[in-house]
Every structure is written in structure tokens, then in C-alpha cells.
Length: 413
Image 1: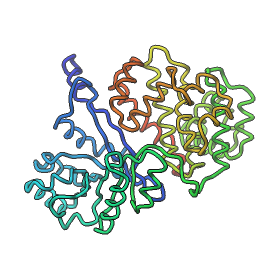
Image 2 (image 1 turned 180 degrees about the vertical axis):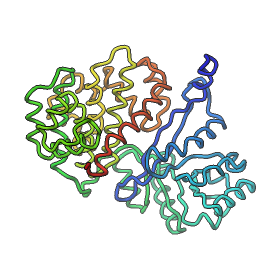
Image 3 (image 1 turned 90 degrees about the horizontal axis):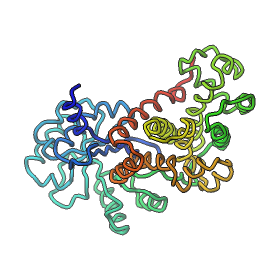
Image 4 (image 1 turned 180 degrees about the horizontal axis):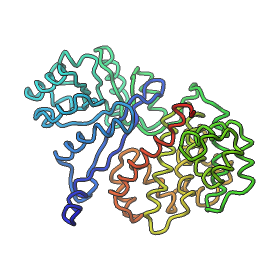
């Protein structure tokens, strides 16, 4: 590729965030797509919206669920969506754009052809199209007063519509929107409600696994004590065997941890333990999305850390990624967990203050996870990595985490 072509590709590249949409039982039912130009010198334009639409098929395959994709009235009117009739997507358009007759007509036509639309904003203009009865209406909790939010949720429900509240970034707000009857919400990871079912045994195994991983975060080779740990935790050992048998690592015949260690060696097993630990975190919280996110962060930190001028051992990066979601998996404060785990200073900082390079790397994972683009750019500048590298590493980490957790979806033969 020529220099000019490379520069053009970089300028056209998008950063993409995928925020989980949850139902009233805290199950992930879809993902909300956010995008932004990777080149900070360029402002958002119509072409970016078109490029986001072009990604819809690959993104829906990546996440394995429906994606909610923002579109402009221009894209709706000019027929750009017609090629994506089979895509598992819901097209999000501003509610007030339906006041424009050509846009309204185009949406009505696409609805008749089987497309699905959601509306961004409370409907206060023209009456909605009959075909939009039952549609999702997105409300922004950060731009709506609490009283108004409650009122609008109830009005939408009475009208036969489905409010989706975005920007639900704290537990009190989640409780409020649930109490008002909202069937869907979207926002940051939150500690699960006390009434949610959890698996204490899986959570305890995850905590022990992270403690062991942290003890080898400096890169030193695991010894006999590691073998004893894998062998003695029956919950973890069963997950490890499922994992290695499904990963085509040459250990499909392993039926015991001793066979697994003999066939693979300690270093390969400790790397496999990273994915198993993420799985146990999700199992402990009864939340498969949390498992995916924890492993995604671990692999993201591992990859981006490799591009930094000064970075700790890859194991330290992966453990930092796991630690960033441990409080949500176990429902305990980070300071308490850090003390309980007796973390080395570098990992303790990554979990609490985030002042060192490893902690800033975790901050970068937060930024791209939630689509905090300004924060992402400032973190990239501080760490000496380009936003384009970060965006590519994020999608690669999505694919890696999904593939590594394949053992959790089906028993290996």
C-alpha cells in the first residue's frame, strides 16, 4: 500500500464502541454502537455515519446479538440501508427527523420491508407512524431531569412503546429507571443487585485464580505450587480441562489436570488460566457478558501494552485487565479486594489509583469500552500510542475473547 493510501485509510478509520443493552433481569440483549473518527484532526461528517453502517454486518457477527446503529436522515432517504435487509440491526434515527415528510416516508417504506427502527428522543412532534407501535424509544438519562425521566418512561409504556434509557452509570439511577418500568437500559458496568443470583463457589475460584496470576505477573516461571493450585481447586480444574480440550492445544485427550500439565507445560496452562478466570468471574456474577468483557480487557491491555515504550510483562497487563472488572464480578470494593489479594504495588495501583503506566492502560480500556473519545485521545497521547492502534486492538480483543470463551458455550468432546 502506498503512503498516500495508508494516510487515506488512517483518516477514514473509525473508533468503535459497543455498549451492552440490558433488560430488567440484567441480561445483555443487544449492543449500542458508537463511533468516532480515529484521526483527531477530523470532525464527524456524513461519511462517518455511512462507514458505521458499512460495519453493521461484521459487528453483529462479532457480538452475536442485535446491534443498535445510529443513522442520519440522509442515509435513510438515499437508500443506503437497503443492502442490509438481512442484518441483525436496529436503525436508530432521531425522533424529530420524522417531522420531515421525505424522511418519514422513507422510514415507513423500510418498516414495510421488514427493517427495524428505534427513535432517539422523546416524541413531541408529529404522531408516530402506526408501524412504529412497540418500537424502542431511547431516552438520555444524563440530559433529562429525574422527574421528567420517570414521567416519560411511564408515558411511553402507556403508549405501547419500549423506552431504552442510556447513560445509566450508577446503581441509584438503575434502580430508579427499573422502578419506573423501563424494560431496557444501557451504561457502565454496575455491581449486580443484591437480589441477583450468584455463584459463590465460582467467585471464590476466580479470586484464588487472580491471586495466583498476580503472583506470576512479573514473568517468572510457575513452579510446583502452581500445579498444586490447579489440581486442588476442583471447580477451576474442571473449567481448565474444558478450556484446553476445546482450544486445539494438543490436549484434547487430557482427562486430568496432571495429564493437562504434562501435555502442555506450565507456561501454556497459566496462559489458559487467564480465559478460565474471566469465565469464572462471569459465572460467579451470573453474567456471561462480564466474562467476555473481562477477557476482552485482558487481551486488549496485553496487545496495546506491547506498543508502549515502557510496559510491564504481558502477564501483568492481562491481570490488570481482569482486575478492572473484579469488583463487579464479586460485588466488593476494589480497596478491599486489593488488600485481600495482597497485590504487588504495580497491580494495586492499576486497580485503585491508576497513576502508573499500567493503570493508565486500564483507563484506556475504560475509554474505548464506553466511547469516551476525548478521554481516549488524551490517554493515547500520554501513553504514546495512536487511537487507530487502540481501535484495532479493541476489535481484535473482542474476537480473541469470544473465541477463547467458546468452551463456555459447549462442552468439549
